[in-house]
Image (cartoon, rainbow, N blue to C red):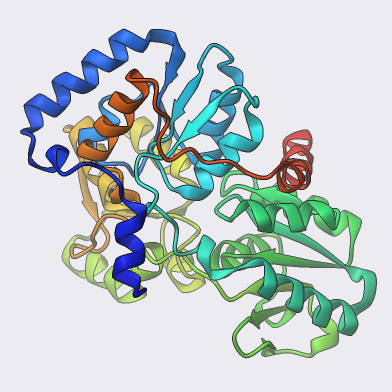
Length: 367
């Protein structure tokens, strides 16, 4: 079976939903929401399409939405409008009687997919053989449940882009070295902001199974997994230079999943929440070039007509995997629930969920 055939098997949505008018799909979504009432909870990630986010009961980042789902014990069904790892985290944190549904199983995350358990275990064996018991693993919440479980099993914690500094500081109070995965850019930007020099960082390449660094190996404090966000890595210093030339005085704000070089050249850098709040609190007439996902940038432009807001990369596309969750798949998932059929349920094995929750709980206790 080729890749296209495998993807097709993941999508069982009936053809009729693909030909429905938008107005009909929206009317059907409203009808099911009204019918199911509090039995249904719809979390929507900031990067979702407007056609779907309009039906969200809450919007936010992945962990925030999973926590809200966990607190909503009235909801039997949680239709998570995000990507696979987000739905996994929601399943880990919610009760067994609650069903977490991902409208399209093809909605994955390229960053999360850059670290599988087999690769991480081989890396850990090699690194602990080289550095002994001096390493504590940390994992970005943008990761699979299996990797979260690995980190939880080895005494580590999850991090978000909002709390990464605090969690990395905690990790250094526990061990001499930090193993940060799967996003090298968030790890590098966080460690650098805490005073770790680039020469004290190394990158583990899972394909070559090698450690790459510019300084002395024995001086390494942070080991970064060679992974990245396919959206945020497309922002460049050249784009910043272009903005500086053509739009002098414009503020440049970026996400820490961008490269170190981009973060260093930007005026502001922070989590999605930080970006949203910074622009919301900025004075009317202020001007912003934003280095993050395009759906969010467009939403910020719409919500703040009193400010000039553009994408740092004028040719940026929305997150392709996040955009798998479209109105037809969303309505299909809702109407299936209305008929008593749970489609695309995301279930994390109990033993994996237990260890992954340990990593999440360590982070939440520190936060």
